Length: 297
Image (cartoon, rainbow, N blue to C red; front, side):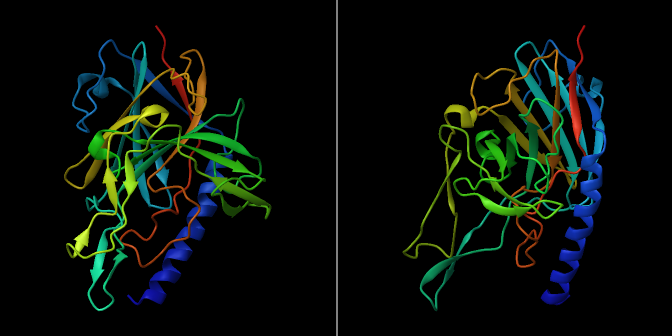
């Protein structure tokens, strides 16, 4: 398929998915129940503990990716555990690999894009539309698992979405469903991220990584996560303390209910890019709105 035809197809798919997702997000939230456990699951991406088999699965559809996402939740006295599973024919672990151009004597960024998964938790006191074409401002806690940049250290990137009518630092322009101007900022939590960008100026190898991987620190290291790809399917386990006492995190009270959504792709407000290995990378969005409830004795 020619690039122009592929671009038209992707734009049509993204537009159709946006319409469907908007209808889903505006409807009533479905309930998901976290069951209590005396034993914490091991965060290794295998989900082979008995407690995961006891947990009730909820299936939500990602219309942009065109796949079903299966979720489960478990909690202990001090932590919450989330399980995400979805089909994917390929395991994409590379991200923005630098490729040497001998005729230009420089590196360029390649089209590789890592597999990702996003939990988006509302930090608002009442019902809210978590999409990035919503009509009201909001803040959300983001748990952003990245197969290349965070998985090796056993973490998900802990960030925020600040959806506002005032332009924030590094915010991108977005437009609401009714045509209003909004801005989406995606700041990382306080502390050190699990990766640092690398700049290569002299040729050493034909392909070089774009990131230095390292242990995250501070509030940005709150979310532990590990993913395993096997037989055409990703399984990703998440763990976070119920209460972190960090202002950039959602705090969980097992007597309360929490609104959230998920996405297969990074939610960055970008358009599909047919030149990428994963053309929909960065164009992710929330479809179903879900309510997490804690099952109590």
